[in-house]
Image 1 (cartoon, rainbow, N blue to C red):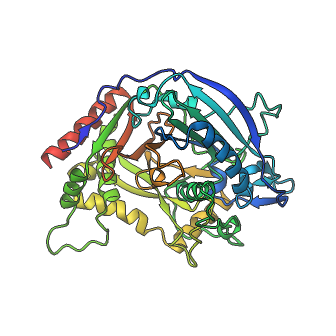
Image 2 (image 1 turned 45 degrees about the vertical axis):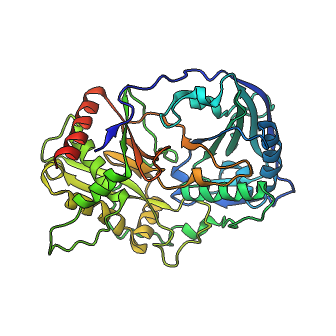
Image 3 (image 1 turned 90 degrees about the vertical axis):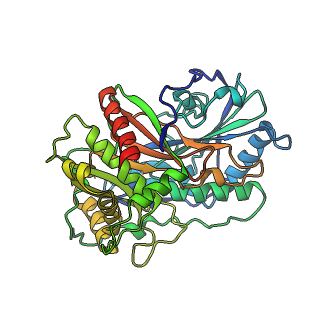
Length: 449
């Protein structure tokens, strides 16, 4: 039960031998309205790029050169309803607040080729640093000011076999994962000559702070920073880290759900979901792997909660901004080690239950009063069920879709498995000694609990 799918890293290509053919700017197909888009307090702390790669096998009806032309045309069209993607980040001249200047400056589109076939790339699940070559953020050939960074980059890289990779880099102020999935669905529909399945809702003021802002709850998930700091970014300095992928099959997850059932007669509010049981297991292993795992040490774990349906009134499903907030769960290491598993699952679930309309509005107001960032022992971020691999493009669904991963001790990621879609891969990066303890805790719990 539970395996390390990559205890020893697979043979990975260190260099995909990518050659660039062209780089151009894609502009909206028609003139768009010049305007500024307000960024919520959630958006503006996410001023960094998220990179994803989508791998497609050979399709005789859609060779890469045909896909390139289709995408150029489609992107120009989609920049009408998604006009902010063609804009640039600016500080408001009066308030200094970060916003998007919808100036129609365009997105960057690059065409490249690799000397390898797609099968030569190897295991697509394992985070290969070389995947970064599939997403260019260079503007060297455009005669543009590199300080005036676009909010979106696309790159199509063809492989010798006829397959290709679609690399996308978007500034996180644009989208959260759910909004990006809707964007991809809309892109695929337009490419097929169909109308948008979901019209985007671009008004971020729906998540503006109240006037006056007021904080009604303690927000243990947030850390105040010095007022002299610029808009903060939730990033950290990388370390020398060991890296492993822990694979849980659908059967493993079912077994964890059984272990999470409370004793007869004990009532708990938390739903026993796959996410909750996997998160509880990961939290326990991460806390107990620390060099400071004394029983009284408090471990605080963070994860993102979609607030769209938790607000009153709810956000539109088509909301394009970041509609997630950070939830937290806290416990002493002694409790994480000794408590029955159902209690840990309950704590994970309580973190989301806490995220009511009132709590979410208080957190947004907190960001209006203070400068700060989410802060905990680690953040668990889930790409598990976002469904990027389910997008139906005219040239077919991706063989696999994944973010480009940069190893971070304070972030643990959940990914779908390429073979067992109901299973999950847990990607962990830790110093070597902590990784040994994490691995031991992981297998000991699954085998003996």
